[in-house]
Image (cartoon, rainbow, N blue to C red):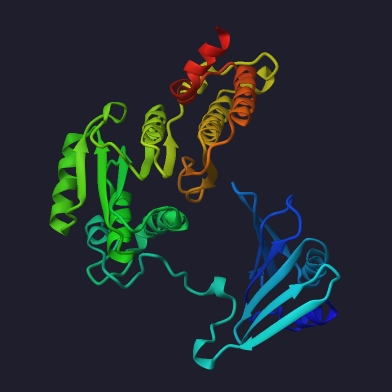
Amino acid sequence: MEQLLNLLNQAMNENMLRMTISGKRHTEIPDKVKIRPVQLKGQLYFQTCVSDGKKEFHKNYPREELLEQIGEWMRQDYRQLQMDTTVQSVQAMVSKKGKATIKQRIVPQKRQAKPLEHNRKKRYLLEEGTPVPFLVDLGVMTQEGKIVKSRYDKFRQINRYLEFVEDILPELNADRELTLIDFGCGKSYLTFALYYYLTVKKQYRIRMIGLDLKRDVMEHCQELADHYGYDRLTFLTGDIADYDGVDQVDMVVSLHACDTATDYALEKALEWNAKVIFAVPCCHHELNRQMHSSLQQPVLKYGLIQERMAALMTDAFRADVLELEGYRVQVLEFIDMEHTPKNILIRAVRQEEATPEKKQQMRQKLRECMDAWNVNPLFYRLRLGGEDEKDTD
């Protein structure tokens, strides 16, 4: 173990690229810890990143403090360590008795990277310098593929969205044509981005449908899709709650659908047993009208506070219902809060359903929470309202 710590003591500097600690020894800790160097006010720190499955947590350590923490992790909690620097790769396995087996490999000169990877120019899934037709028409790119400075936030948002999609691609069956629906797609710049990324960059076979109430906008989007040669991308005019144009869907997207339109989109996704769901809700009014609590009145008497609490609770209840229906759910920050407050992304991937007993426990706890706030969200009523009626019979 001392040999490993001495090696880390020498290698943890500005030439380090990344480190991953994994192979947990007990269940109540995160699966892995990711570490990277960062510059803060001109000083070198090391940032750790762990996830609880729903949210990522970051902490910055001075070098000596992190070395001490790594020693503790490897003695008690984890058995594997992988570190990459600009000149070498290190792998270590630590036994229960604390004995470390270490493998070092020198990185070939031609593959050596520049230090402090996070300070280098970020590489996006849609790269600058490669013209993308719809981005050019949006005014995000020039004809030469250069990002227009005033539209850089839009470019970052599009790529951030695609990064969230890339994370779940292993969950989708790449051996057949996939069906995707984008509810409330509006001007559809993210719809075009997703279609382009999956078909052109990743070579997936997909059929994609964009649906919105605005006929003139959908007609224009269809003209653009035809112009780009996107022959499996169709735009339709219609209401989310009434749409029944397909029998099976692999991925449902609902970005900024207003108020309860998100609930109908989620309900449709469950009807189709969709493998993946992406929702960025918008304009939360329903619970704000319902929510009241004598116990919480000192907080709720402030209208702005109640409005924001209602919005957060609406999305939390949506995520809870999806979990109850057999999905692994993450509530993530879509883009920086400075750009828009409507930045919560609900990402859900279908897993095996819980046992009836477990589902009953989850539903009872959810019902108790809703009763405490005197709310009855639409998505809950759509999925479980009938079961509540059975319980009262």
